[in-house]
Length: 545
Image (cartoon, rainbow, N blue to C red; front, side, top):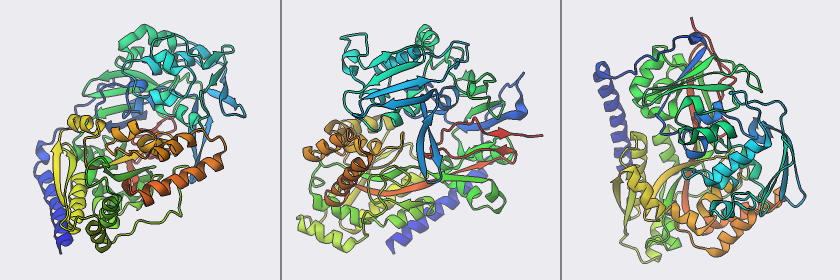
């Protein structure tokens, strides 16, 4: 009955929210029209996003639209049905030594940045050195396995030992240890290749001012009006061919109701429904929009983090009890109308290393109660669950329902709200007892998941999991260097079993389908391989009257 009451309450909140939105409709602020004088407006894509702080690919870990459309990388990820592979981009080919340490790259000939400068090996070296040494860089880990990175970062030298220029189009990168995910790392937005001459001359202006933010990609960065919009225009001289649309108008607007109205009124061409929360149901379940829905899996995992440094979460019996207390089917149904699939480990569907045969975590609140009693907690315990104040209704409903399920086995949840800055600071220091979040793939390799959360004591503390089994951490670190793919994936499979089944280090919940809706004149739009909101629009066209 208690769950029924909670679900009814959530349904009422949806209805009330919808009514409130209708009442407030006349007061909804719709962004002002962008000045597109001189542009081929009929061929421009119109999308909506949150306003970024910076678009420098090396200095952002969340806003990738500019990186994926103005810049290119040495390699890219291409999907083939249910699988993906690394394919050439700025690097036309490469060889890897038998010991997995030396990568020899060969650049495409005659590639030019949009300012006319030729791409050379020196630009790649400059990009990697800047990625390692720029004070605001947040993506250093992508290239940290290159030999000599620590000496460069520490200021002991201005050379990068592991990078050797052979000529303008060929270069070698030597790693300090074999790392099978290295190519995958180079496919990420943070590894976008920069023009040495322009970027160095721009200094701190790069990534903030359009005219000095130069790449080799299919679009040119034309204009950025803070808080209003970004304009990209087609790079007709792009080495890989000009894009299918004349440009992109990126409007900044976080009001979901006005986004919905803009799309219905024909003022947006592509709308990301994941950010619309309950407003998304209007499109997903409405008969008139079914043929315009585009969906793809988000290669990521929603999870509940459990801090092992906080009693009684340091007891594996307590963590296993919490795992069994959650009806994850219900969580997925209530939060996302069942649009997704349950996950039972660390590696989600769509990721290299996903194990379809891992034993499911069963829902068994009575067994969970027995485990708590065995742990000396017959009367339960208090548990703080962190919640960022700016989270939307869907996430709040999810946390509320998780808390009610914990309560059913005797746990006394206390939802502790805090601003995002406080949450990030406390989490980084290992000071959050419990929270729920989602991690999406930056690159298609198991290390992007198991290494991020459990690959070192420092990584685990920064996620407020505080995992401390040195033997397992050592095995995770060793697995990164296994050259033989089959052997490496077998080791990851064994480690996943230990972490989730034996040690109950976290509670895996589900992965979700990512829905977009497109306008009638839009062709060629697909969801990116990992289900990100940011994607490349090179092959997307639009026509309107």
